[in-house]
Length: 328
Image (cartoon, rainbow, N blue to C red; front, side, top):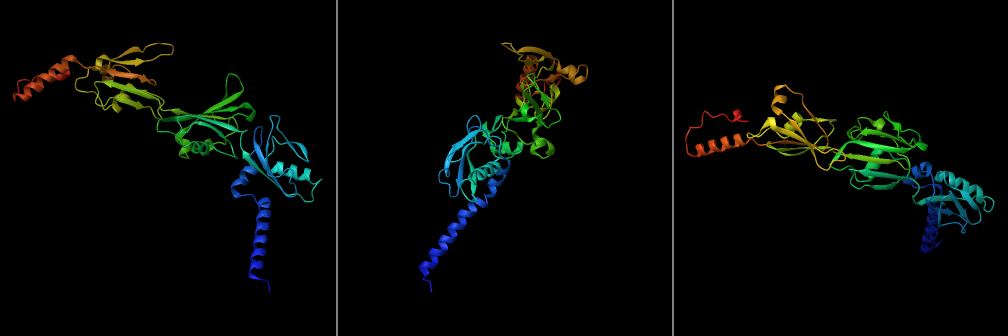
């Protein structure tokens, strides 16, 4: 009868051999997609595991700018443009001259050839390396998602070599070398338009817009900046609604829009008569990004209000006939 020690030793050897064989025959499930879909390119670094081929095994190899890798025994192999699985097959065929039934496994140790730039209102903007097939939503997840100040659209720019972007409004830029298109952020994140959650290609640029903001200042109940969100435009009346309306001392006919125009050093002033807009005698005015709607105080109204407050503090009704709204 074999000793307990011998049985343990035999079991350990068998188990180790099984692990070695499985490492070549069955790649990790997480790597399967990368092996079948990732296209190798210049500057990628790979590691080759080859049984009975110590000369090339377990050493890092950098794919050259020309797309080649030079291996001991085998020589130069064109790796760029191949998937990991395809390169494994090429190496197996090349090693058959030296080894009977070679077993080869290739692992991408550094992804360098498929950069994707993600900029704009995202948590961690920067350059990612594609590893297998990734959609817009997956790429946004990889950079930590979008920020609170993200706008309503995502712009994607793609090199023409990958074809026109598969989106309805895709078009070529003036150089003809890139196609561009925009998608609605909430439609993609909310799965309202899954067809817009397209696969991303190497060298794509994904730009998440910032929320466009208009400002309402002066004699309003809640002054501040208000995001345009998914609205294409925001009108004066809509902005005033967000600011919860006019203050009691406002001078609506003397309001103005302060707008910065390209190339100007200061904002231009556009007069706005809110009284006429309220009464329908004038059309509502659309606001642009970074516009400031300023509603001034009426000195007469403020003086009347102070008078009424003073009289009220004295416990008199002497100002009962005064109407604040009559002041301009």
